[in-house]
Structures are given as structure tokens and as C-alpha cells.
Image (cartoon, rainbow, N blue to C red; front, side, top):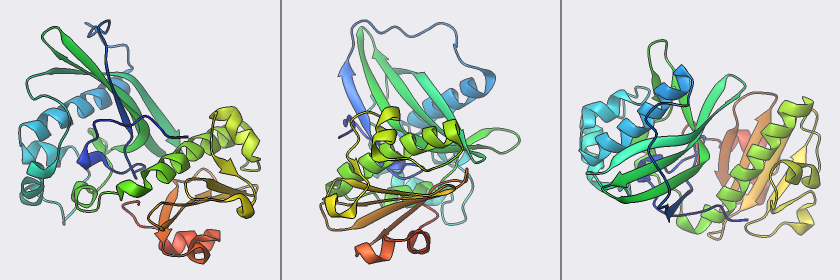
Length: 269
């Protein structure tokens, strides 16, 4: 299963921070709403997303810096050097509005997916960001919980986007299953109940590039997949904690939960 792909933001090339999938479509019937349909937190996060697009388009490094958790290796000057390479897919003159925002909380970590409606005069289009991006409330405001400079400097290999998309969709199903039954014990068919069309298998003999291997226990689960580039990817889950995203050059390196955790990076894939 391939998630819808179109105009993507290099700065959001990670989901969970690991990768971005989006879809673009012309929509004559879309209308920007006059009032928010969100809660106070959802409204604040929606404004965060809209302001990020605007700040990137306008080259405002200090505004962008304020929207992310602080990192010593990603100060405003570092961001300014990278802004010219970030393509948002949005016209700077357009009006923007976040719709269909979803906040997901798993193990104390919060992530979002959203639709972004762009309107310029009578022309409208919708960008659909289906992956969940990490956000955090720091006591005063909502921010993206990631190192922006790493996202820009280390974008995912496009050749491997299909398997990563598949693993993220499987992750969504696994988290939904865990929230429902308080265990990761589930078959591939069980996961398809939550997200239909998954290319996920229970037996490694059935594993091919682009397909996800699902290994689960009561409180632990492991997903493994190989990209077209030959790189092996994994996602490790322990209880309701945040997922760990690892990658390596061989299957053996990610074939166990401990192995996956040892290859995991704080910035994701």
C-alpha cells in the first residue's frame, strides 16, 4: 500500500518523526471556515502548522526557530542557511488553513496529522499530510518536537519511501490495536482491521522489499522492512512509550528488539 504522495516539505521529511507523505488535489468545493472547529489545544497546533508554512516561505529564521524545540546544533543562523533549500509546495501569496487536524497521544508523546487548504483568489487546493508529526507543549506554547536542521540535512532516501510509508501505516494500526486491547499481541490480519490494505506479514519467509514484517508480544512489538536501496528499517514499540526508529545495512542488525533499539536515532530515520 502506498500512501498518497505529492507536494512535500523537506523540513517535515520525518515522521514521528520520520517521514512525510502528502497528497495534492484541486478542490473547487473547499471553503475556508470562518470559525475554528477545534479545541483550544488543537487550535493552537493548527496555527503552529500554518505559521510554519508562512515563516518558511518568507525566510523568517527566527520565527521558524521558535516553532521547534531548541537544539544547540540548530540555531537561527543554522536555519537561515537551510531555508533556501526547503520547498513547501505552497504559494507565499496564498491564504492557508489547517483542517482535519488529528492529535494522537501515545505514551505521553503527542503527534499530529492534518489537511492544509491553500486558497489563492478563486483557486483552491488541499495538501493532505497523513503521517503523524511530533509536537510538544512546553508549558507555554506548542512546538514541533524535532531538530529541524537534521530533518533538512538528512532527508529520507526517496527509493525507500514506500517501505517507510508502509511501516508508518502499520505503526498507526499497531498503536490503535494497543489502545483498544492493551497488548501488542495481534496478527497481520488484526492490524488490517485498523488500517485496511496493509502489506504486512507475520513470517519472515514472506518478507520482500516494501513489505513489513510484524513481530509482537504482550508489551513489545517490532516492525522490520527493507527499502529498494537495500537499507533495512525497523520500528520498536515497548508498552505505551514512544516508537524507536532504527535502520541498518543488514537484516540481522534489526532482527531483534534490542538490535533495533541499538540502531535507533533520536531524530528518527
